[in-house]
Length: 143
Image 1 (cartoon, rainbow, N blue to C red):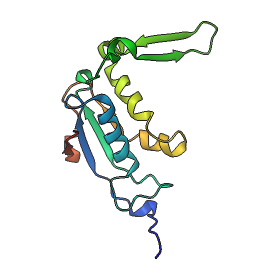
Image 2 (cartoon, helix red, strand yellow):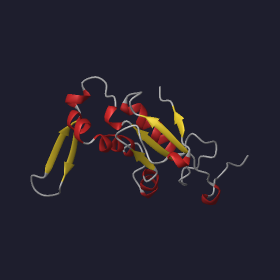
Image 3 (tube, helix red, strand yellow):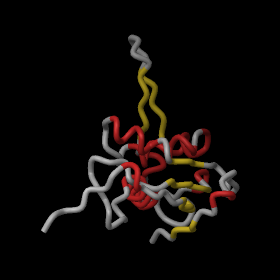
Image 4 (cartoon, rainbow, N blue to C red):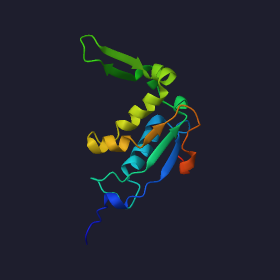
């Protein structure tokens, strides 16, 4: 039995909407990463970007469980001496909610060229409005 290998030319992309306010951030990120990779399709091919587009809404209402708001740290470094900047999850949720959700999803994608191509199909919005209504996205429930 031969295994199926999808070609770039035959990929059909759909659009999905995920509400970040309905489930913990990690579960939302896993669901989004699997859809961006295309693992939900029977035609999944690891070396091809066969995933779909994902819209995540309500990033400012993302749920973090436990003590993560106080304990979880986000780090940036400017590559200069003493250039380390650290923020708690509480600060990120208040000031940069879109970046917090994007980082969660990006960390679950492959760290190579293919992962960067998949990441470009992710759209995160702070509120429940988005400009992609013309694409007729399907609403996904995250449990």
